[in-house]
Image 1 (cartoon, rainbow, N blue to C red):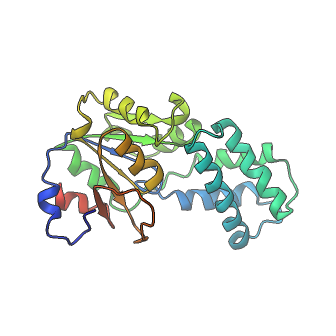
Image 2 (image 1 turned 90 degrees about the horizontal axis):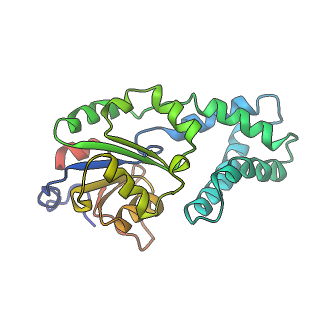
Length: 239
């Protein structure tokens, strides 16, 4: 693994990539902000305690998305099951189906790009094709993307809920490759914040990977990214 500040990173990232595939949430988009806003709006008339209940929801949601990555639950089940479990654990009254519907409606409005993302994409677009590969729900992701300038920079946008395959399955990355008009996985760099979906998935597809480790988390897994960065702008320094 190569870390920011390592003098060897410049030579390593001198490799000639032609396509850069980004993850969406937690990489280009501030998903936590969108999630917080949607939860409060969907549960505004319930006994919702933001700090306490938000953390409970996130644990449940993360567990279900991990099952989704493994193919053990479908997206259609996930969207309701997380609220069924959340209501059961918190004791908040309500119908998980209607709450899920409201939550997704508000979540689809939460298009919060991290600072500097558009500038980064403008710079990269001059030299590379850019794509987006996300495990999100189609009605949420497409709505959020459309509220930003993101689509104009992309040679491909692949949403797992639309193609029936999710990261880390290599086929979703190969779909992106084909749609972007690229043929060589080795000329592609995958950038994302998730070791288990983005980094493992990119590796599965024969692509180099860059772990966007914004919080400086310790990697205790056996998954080893090609590169690791703390800020997205570091891509401009080393590509």
